[in-house]
Each structure stands twice: as structure tokens, then as C-alpha cells.
Image (cartoon, rainbow, N blue to C red; front, side, top):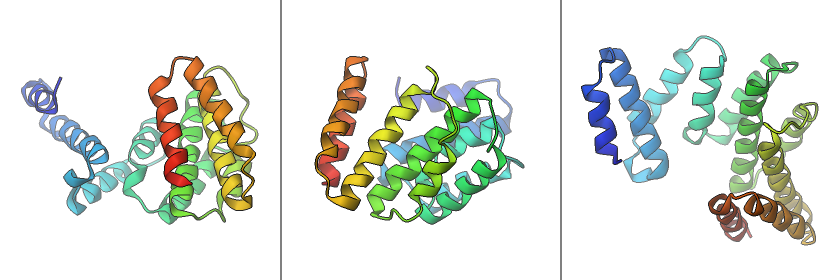
Length: 191
């Protein structure tokens, strides 16, 4: 299915005009994430406003924010994530915990891409109490992977790269070949 098909389905749907506009905006946002040439300041601003029109950090808002974190600066993401962690510091809701881990994982990625690690320990400490469950295992592995990348960058301890390769192998053995290749590329791009 192509994007024009998706937009046509949205346009021809029985959704309200508001929901049609919203779905089209989200589609355009995802396209901009996949192809930065399609991004514009207006699109980014509209999506950011739409996310923060939602009054509190509901599960839906967390999901939207997680999907569009690339539209924010690292410092803005850190501030927003601190507020999210404050609100949900003692949640036992595994769906919220999954979103929190995904958000922290994005923070680690952005920190690596920007070579800025001064706030990373804060976020890692805040998620320490989230127990590993089958639902959360993927994000826990991801966080350990990126945490090791940061430790390598901070200490030049190349031995930790083997740990990262083990995480990649685990994910590949679990059937996540494409994602494993993305992690290999991430290592290559950042060293």
C-alpha cells in the first residue's frame, strides 16, 4: 500500500473532518520522519502543538510523543522526559512502562548522535526499578545496547563492543534480522 493510497483511504473514510485532518497530519509526520526532505517547520510545529494540546501525559500522548521525538531538540526531549518520568515514577502499568523505556531509549540514541552524555545517567537511574518482563525485554536489551555504546564513547573501552555484538546476535536469533542490521549500522555510523 502506498502513501497516496493511505491518504485516499483517509479522505474517503467516514471519519469526521477533524479526524481526517488529524490522520493526514500523522501520516505526513511519519513520512517526514522517513524522508527528512518532506519535513517542514510548519509540519513539525503543527505536530508538536497537536501532541501538547492533549492536556496530560496519557498513554496516547506518550505514544505520539515517542513516535515524534525526532522533531524536538535533545534538550527539549530531556525536559519533556523528566516530566513524564516524574508523573509515572511509580507506575506498574506495563504499557506505560513500555512507552517510558522506548522514550528513554530514544534519549540515549539522541545523546549518542549529539555526543552529549551528561544527563544520561539521570534517565538510566530513573528506569532501574522497572522490572524486566517478557513485554519489556526488547526495550531492556535496546537500552543496554545503547548504554554500552555510551560507555565505549566515554571510556574508549572497545571490549564493550563485544557486548553490543552479543545483543545484536540475540535480537537476530530471535528473528529481528532487519533491526539487527540497523544496530550494526548504528555502530558503524557512530565509531
